[in-house]
Length: 165
Image (cartoon, rainbow, N blue to C red; front, side, top):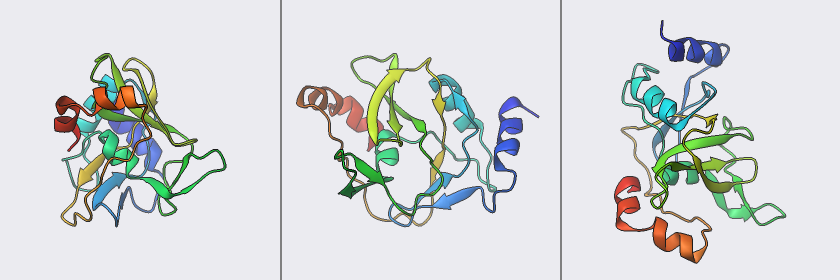
């Protein structure tokens, strides 16, 4: 048994189901994080994950992770909430597969304790929650990130657009 398989077996003990299908996007999400790892380890883990009889798991894009936030409401500090039906994230920070275009040693993360969207070195340790497209794809997800205008121009360039849409 590989190390990632051992980690997953430990993380899913006691879980009724190892996945959750998002009724808004149709994406199927891994419920239990195997723990914190670097971005490269997370990419390897996602590529080798066999879960719920499926092997087409991937690390979510920034847009995938952002779709779990509720932009219709806000905390007192103005940051968005995590959608009510999303029960499995906790107040943790998760890797996205999206590389920061102008600093390719960084990738985007979403910190669900405050709904912050930031980029960090790929050698940093963050949680992983894999995703896959299911047969029941729902609404199209649009990007609604509160980025600074200078960041938005760089990030929303064609390279990023190809990676996330």
